[in-house]
Length: 93
Image (cartoon, one colour):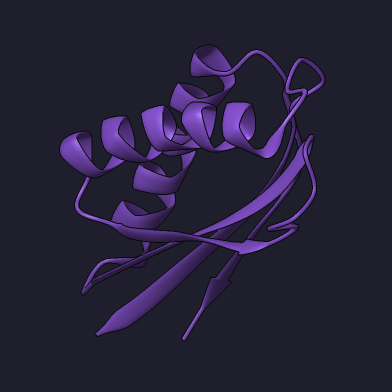
């Protein structure tokens, strides 16, 4: 069994309050959770208006499948946000 963790950091230049940031992040979270079998949570920059770090976790027997899912998630987020992914990293256990 392989556990995969994808960490991404997002910069949201058009968010002018925590409420706007959370509204944007909730749209992303809902879309990703419906499409992929992953658990996710905001793990850093909780009180910053324009930055967020989100962690996505999934498990599978096939490491390549996890990598494929994470790459699709990154692509979906790039298309869905009015901002940019400034950092991403994948960990395995």
